[in-house]
Length: 158
Image 1 (cartoon, rainbow, N blue to C red):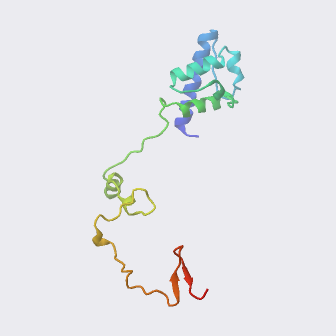
Image 2: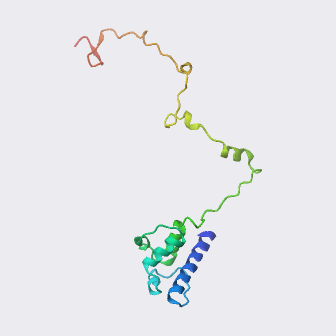
Image 3: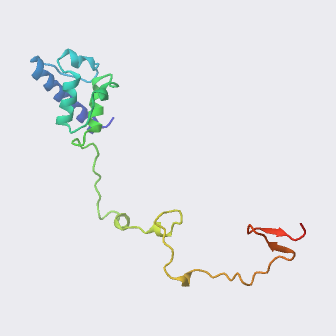
């Protein structure tokens, strides 16, 4: 597990401990290995936990969201991953001088979809000069065959 994820998990558990301390007025320090039922014993009901997580961490949990969390570490991971206020992605430094050509191409828009026939953005040439012309008037009909009513070929022998 990454260092940032561990630190966010530890911060959440400390905040959860502060919430429990404010309710029961006894000092509680959660490590993450405890089962989720410890919260009920320390005065944090599921309704209070849901409202606290939704308010402090800008999540949108319902009461069933916490059912699959067996330990407090799993609860902390759920809240950290779901919260938009906790920045979990590490921003990569892009030095402009190390790969100038690659960095330039990362920011140039690509028109590759214009030439991909399977894409919805596929564009046909705008002028008819580029399209090949096929002269079908010079095609001979096969001897002994006529065009039937349904548009298919049929033999005159039948």
